[in-house]
Amino acid sequence: MTPTTASIQVTCSNCNLRELCMPVGLDCQQMQRIEEVVATRRKIKRGDMLFQNGEDFTSLYAIRTGFFKTCVATEDGRYQVTGFQMAGEIIGLDGIVHNHHTCDAIALENAEVCVMPFNRIEEISREVTALQSHVHKVMSREIVREHSVMLLLGSMRAEERLAAFILNLVQRLHSRGFSSSELILRMTREEIGSYLGLKLETVSRTFSKFVEDGMVEVKQRHIRILNQEALQRLVNNSREGR
Amino acid sequence: MTPTTASIQVTCSNCNLRELCMPVGLDCQQMQRIEEVVATRRKIKRGDMLFQNGEDFTSLYAIRTGFFKTCVATEDGRYQVTGFQMAGEIIGLDGIVHNHHTCDAIALENAEVCVMPFNRIEEISREVTALQSHVHKVMSREIVREHSVMLLLGSMRAEERLAAFILNLVQRLHSRGFSSSELILRMTREEIGSYLGLKLETVSRTFSKFVEDGMVEVKQRHIRILNQEALQRLVNNSREGR
DNA sequence: CGTAAAGTTGAAACCAATCAAAAGCAGTGG
DNA sequence: CCACTGCTTTTGATTGGTTTCAACTTTACG
Image 1 (tube, rainbow over the protein chains, first blue to last red):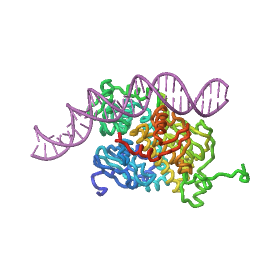
Image 2: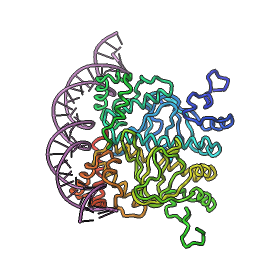
Image 3: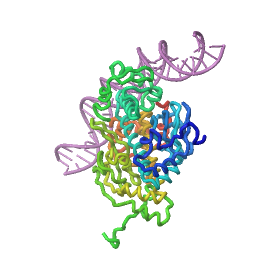
Image 4: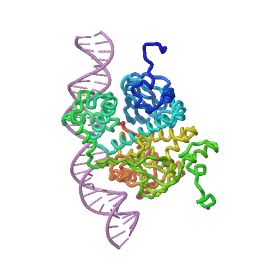
């Protein structure tokens, strides 16, 4: 495909997710350097893996479109969804330590990612300090996110967990320009349950309870939040931590 | 204190924890550069905080001696121990994202840490690629560790959690030259419970059950592992994940 | 030595898991 | 277009593991 083609070549500088996955406040030259980080783009069909446990680590991926889950599994059949990722978020950080991935990344809807070879990232971030700083912040953010998941899994009851989950999802969607009161779940009840440390039946029952209490409207995977404050209260009002 | 003093100046090159907190395989010149990362050392008394939630982030800390816990808290009283750290481990990574810490680090016994100002780390890791790579790996390792905690909290029962916890602790102690079958807990049952998402009574009961089953010997905080395989089986043999 | 903190143990309550059945929905192919 | 199939979701009844509440013991420490 030549530059003269009608289809516009997407680069970081004209990408509407720029503020999400790249440093801000760069001059033109730095911006150009940073665009070299993205080697190619890659499309992943719903249900397919972007990478899997054991696979060699080569690149980080910035999600352009679509929705992913990451999950860890053990030989003996234990399974845990460790996160759900959407446009602008970076995935693959788990692979850096041992040069191979330790979790699976599966597309929950057709998706496209920017492939960023990690050796390029390291090379360029030696020159562009804004990128260096950005990479550090991305990793630190993931660590902090996981702290809050640990808090959730370690100290919340089912209702509190699901409320926190819904609020977190809409908040992230809202910051991407979507509604702050409506969302469409891209994952099954079972996947939600795995992430929240609950069984799918419990997730379903808890949704039903929220509906009874008039806090949300649930039509399959379409969720409408009717009383955000009530959900927030559920998350905040613990009787006492564990 | 002058170099002529009897007390030996500890540097990274003669520190016995070098392989744990610093890159390996460096030449002499690189080693010297890397030693500049450590600004000072700092002693922390048992019970005191190394840093706390909200505090400005300036440095990462390499633990020289002692034992820490990190924990997150919310205004409404929820509380979660997010990790226990021992000699050679790096702490403070949570502060990088927002330039202030989001958790507390508390010494569980008198401790000493190497203070590594983060701007120095960034500066030097632009020049010494081994350090750059090392920093990335340290952060990625923390992400992977937290994945396994999520698996534990999300899919294991009390016995499995405690077994995993004990085995993890001895394994880390063993790799530091301590016994692979005996350990002294530096934390209370309540702190263990918080980390494992259990109440202190459940931790205590589970210890008692392990003793009944002849898997461990427990004298207060002194633990002796009698049947490591049995503990390992507990961790591995899940009936089915969540 | 006395008080506070940490740990153990028992009984009852409760929340979520398990087991089971049925209904809803999506995709396939006749 | 509809029947068929499999997957997802909901709901009910029951079980079970962990929490809660409470009492008591042991250890640590000034």
